[in-house]
Image (cartoon, rainbow over all chains, first blue to last red; front, side, top):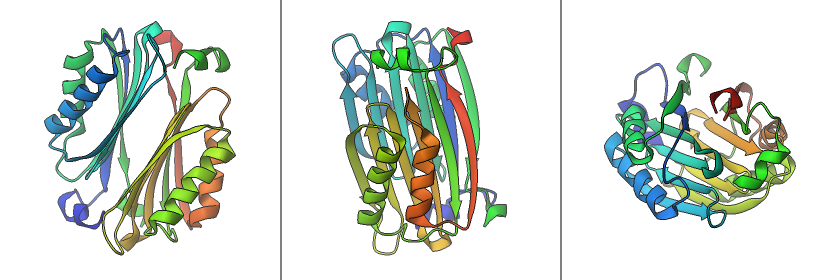
Length: 125
Length: 125
């Protein structure tokens, strides 16, 4: 991912947001999850390379992973408790918080917990 | 992912480890990255559903994502600075630290930073 370095802050290579969505809607619907992920990537200003989904069965969870030119996004859902664990890792100019905002519109959670982690902090180099 | 709940601690649904590997070897080799990810999933006691790779070009980075029955693992590499950003998210009895140990053997980093995050902590339910 050589070309992304020049686009980021000198302090780190990328930002990784972990989001807990409680009280979600439609997290058991693989097609909705897929469209939500694609929409979130677009909202973040990221480029989708691949979208891969796995549905654990009728009424059960969905795993969705999007490989981005800027890293990845994933969702793992537990519809039986209306929960989804999301992560958005992006380099360069892409904004992970815009992806999270888009996903909030898609799944309408009632409660959210978000943490942000800087990846590849340069003082370790 | 309904069936995983009964296998985890009552306090959370899964463990998500973020690992920064500095001074890595062979992170520009997609086949090595693929085999490393599969080996790490096995070491963790996780079940591989899909392995997806993207190589950004000769001598450039590799993105690898493994969808697991227990969630996912990913790697994004910057071989020009011998760096890889790894995450391992697993539910149930799978142990993310065993995956990290396996990946250390595969990439031989000289410096590592690891953080662990509990996903789906129940007091939010």
